[in-house]
Image (tube, rainbow, N blue to C red; front, side, top):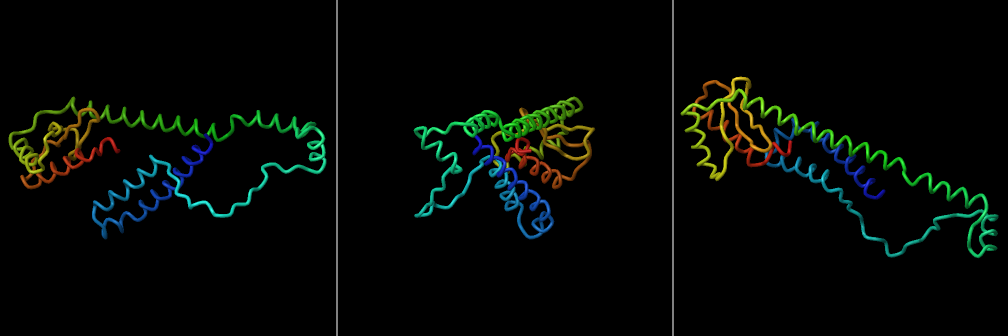
Length: 215
């Protein structure tokens, strides 16, 4: 159990450092590298967070074993005189220490981390659900031209299943929202056909990549 907790702590620490480095280098990466490569870098960090894998070297051919317990000469004499069983104050002290540390600080930290992770997950799901519910409350059917351009983009991408399209007056920019039933919402403004196709293609890319779930 302790090994797993330490592995998770190490994974969180190293991944946090990687996230900070990627944030700092984002302006440079966006100028020199493609969006696909940047997505792959962030995906690698996400996989690292999900799978706490340790990469270790092979065991050396010669190993020196170090005793787990070192006894003072007095304790060693008592050990040899009692058939290999350590008695006296030291033995009682060691037994009591083992009982006291059965539920150590690492378990408490794990429970705190687990509670925080659950709270963040619940908060994200509820926030997205409230946003989707609010958008649908004010949503209306798109215009004929918007719908025609949307079907044109779906045909170009070859998608067999696409989210619903709505117009919504309370948003300033297009957005894809909804975890269980994703939908694309357009602000109530006029777009040129070419611009509208780019917008719809962009939102469909988010849908294909399951970006709502990743977020």
